[in-house]
Length: 481
Image (cartoon, rainbow, N blue to C red; front, side, top):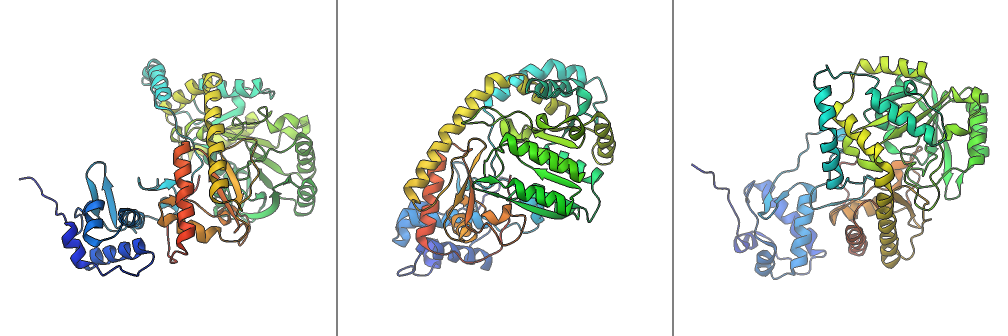
């Protein structure tokens, strides 16, 4: 016997709802009233709600009011949608730990501006999958474990560094499950609780979290709209003598800035004098939009400086985060020690993902120009929409990378993020990127990785959120990439 799920008509629901006359904003009161009915059991769980047009007619309100109310219900977890089947009541999921929910995808109804990561065109993926089938068949006859990474992929990555001006041997490459995995391995091997780590402020939140989880003490150096203050970096290295330094010199996340060559040389020399390991994240290095692609940071290192430079890379920002393929470049001896450390938690990466990564890297010269052109067009669309709707906001167009670092002119970013969530836009305030608490409350990182029309819609929703007034304070999950 088939199961029949309940439904609620517009007339039935209207009879249970309060009079919305004079209540502003009406969509928020409507959303709260419906969620209260669900919690009270007066509207059944997993019941189909009336169509937006039907409920709007029954209540005598506009259809956008009902649309916004349903969006808010979905955002808060009191409703879910099925493609072509309507909207159904639900209850929020409160059981997943916050560190996990930060990384979960946004609901279908929300535009996700919290994660700066491009998608992979399906035809590119289809072609790559077809290309790896023979190699995968050969590997299927082996155990499939390799803590160093597949030899052919290590050779491809090494050759890529060599081509960019940094001679590299395959034994200097360790393939990891993303750049974050590479950083975690380095912290686990080279740092002990209480050690100092120099970080940029702002910086990539997940890297900052990894450093904090390792119980390391951060020494923050500023990255302003004008870039890195090398004198401050030199002073921090000389006075604090940090054991490690984590830097993103290539289209820095979140500012998009590119560290000048002269500054790189000075940082390398200062780190060498302090005996500090440099962990250089070049995940965004391929995404040069207005300047030539930069040479690897370690190219500037003298022979005696190079042994303490660890370079981290990834497929996540230039191709697709779903591959979970990253790598690090270091001395062959250090790579061996890191691979031994890896075995305790991860015997090796996915063979299929590594083979796909190799195909995509081999084809990068053909694929990357189209990717960069898409990003330029999307960056222009985002900047145009922001100028139209928020003429007082300011930013510097970055020469590369994936996001704008926007100055709102006042410390309202966290409040705006809450308002935007109610309008179906997920975004995080600049405070999440801060090495020190309480700063960057006037900043938003706004990625331009989504299609232009989606970015314009997101900015329009944010403008509506600002016009609607403040949202009620509440706890919510947060994530970033």
